[in-house]
Length: 613
View 1: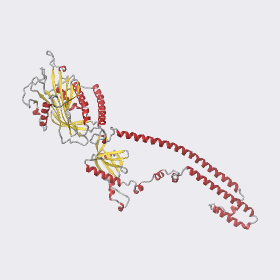
View 2: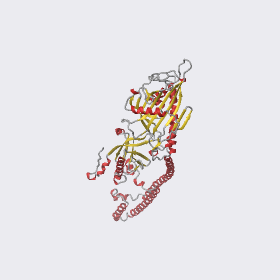
View 3: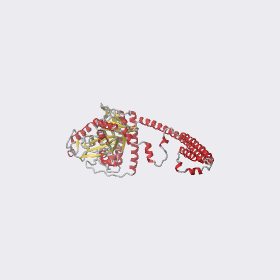
């Protein structure tokens, strides 16, 4: 905190001058529609509000500041933690952590604004006028301050010069008459020398009336000696010269007047052009504010959003199209520079020649007719939840979509079918989704391996902005936190979940074994929900079975003899306030694309590699 100092006396100090000290605190500031709300360090000093990326980066300078003199502070109508500060067209959207802190900020800012001295007598004493600053900066200028007075035009200056000319001419005429009289008196003085002193006195008196103390320069004798000079001719010459000078000045003033008129016409045209440009800018800005891509937080996802469902969907669809275009370009570049990555050795099973891949050893344990291989080695604090989720998916996810489940067929493209059940809870769409697919040339282990292993996540997942393994529970179970790319106007989402891969042996020799990847949301102390993202909840399973058509004779099994049957189920609670119709439309579009993209990636990676059963 900085100390306030003043040049006045102690009696002049107001206790509220402490407001000029520096105050700082952390608020969330709306940056743009891509990054949304970001934490910033806000500093209030005097009547200047500034912000920094963080408190530690103050030494690098602020990233923006506004003067509170004409600022308008507006608490948000619906968001109890948000308030806006606007100065003309510049608006800062700010959010506090709780309503009480927001009110404290508003009160403090309003108090600084009121005590900033804007428009007060003290502010006039502190800031010089434009004219005085200009005069001080241009010491060589010969323009007087009076020439800037309102209404004092060049025409008036010309009339003033004409008046001076008339006065000067009358003065010259007076002097001429005087000198004529002096000549007459001098001619008579030869006969009346006794009147010399009187003439001398009159001569000096008249010269004194003309404003010049000639007596101090000329003596009486010198004046008498100069009476023979042709004063009339000299006066006429002086008069003509003076008139010539004034005529030249008048001519110059006429030129300046003409130039002033020309400049005034050009200035009027420029003012009109700028006025039209300003009107066009304001009209364009008004239209821009009406559109959904205007980047203010009032247009983002929320219960009081100013954007309607149709505009919301159009904006999301446009953003997804752009992402797809970028992904296609990236995929094309990767295809040209593709490289082979060796798969890890198979430690779970081996090739078996019967019609279906079967279990080569006897059954040792049972969980409702399902064996969980190596389950005893996969023990951690989430083991009970993992076993419950796996059992639930094996029991219900593989069931047929018929009956009373109310499954609706969304998409059917070849071997791929996508079903959905419409479920809402408190206005949030919780539609369970189920998709079935059959992919040739890959095994169930390969599909689940690439789906589970985080080393390949960025190769096929295009919706993730960042992800990291929070904790490794075992060789087959990890906790992952991932942040999805923001698609404006929807808010950004993140998810924290346990990811488990399992091989489940069948209880019937004629049925194939099953590979399963199960992802379900959990909580973790190191990654609590943040204000930046909405924490989504998921329960997703990728269930795969490998079907083998044995080749004729003693030929080895190739990828032409393999078919992977995939069942993908997803129960997602996106949270937030996105419109239900938009979420369903996006799910209908994105889930089939995801399955095709992912299975194509597995086929491409597995081609030419050893078969991983």
